[in-house]
Image (cartoon, rainbow, N blue to C red; front, side, top):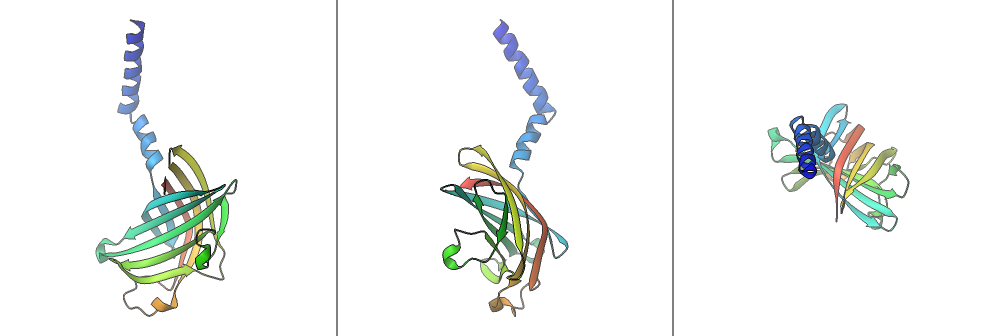
Length: 186
């Protein structure tokens, strides 16, 4: 009898939490994902995906923020950040890697796409300091949540400088950037 009373009481408490939105809100908060920044002083918000790979005592985190433009479909942009998270550190300097350093350094790039055709590629501006901070929380087997901030400047690569179909400027400054992404193991 006492067991049934406890079960009914517990069920009622869970019902109250769900009906008031308390449990639902926590679940939504844990899964909310975004990348937000100012791009050349204009608000920039995008969808985001992320993956991670453990490499000994380091964690390679890759974040891809994609933004489609409904007025120019199928035009879209992609901001990519790769952060090599070292044990205990939260702040990083991003730099342009050589081809053999891609998995061993923190870096980023930006591209404009027209469906599956690259309109423009951008690299980190060589004379500017690019920063990112990140914290990682485990949320289950093969899942983590990454939260952080970034400030980066990209310049268009010369091969794409004269393309008439580009929509962005030659220099792109992402300031006051923040992100929250659920990372899946790969």
